[in-house]
Image (cartoon, rainbow, N blue to C red):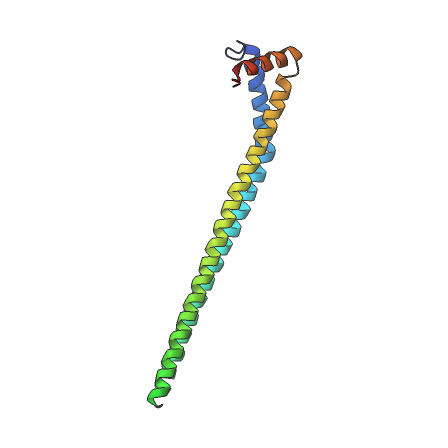
Length: 164
């Protein structure tokens, strides 16, 4: 009946224990976790900026490429029809390759950002889970120090078990 209707003393000590745990987490764990998340966010932001720079460079290269193609077009007009056909094929291949490379670089940056974000979230969840397990273990150890309580708990569990 003690577990269903806890006494004032039990509630008091549980609140004291929770307060101490909350203080320890607030003092030591949360700053580390928030600093880790902030550093990962900064890394992700830096990678996004780098991806934007790469995209701008690709646009600049496309502009230069277009300018070079305009010059080649003026010179190409003087060449034979066969030379015109070959240069058009080369232009299309270069354009497709540049587009494919830029898309691949952008996709790689997005994937890296996503994996870093998921890693940060997973690390935070794992840290919280480990703290919870440690706390639960200490609470159970403290609760089961008395031999009579241990025997009563084992008997209760055995009654709850249904053997076939």
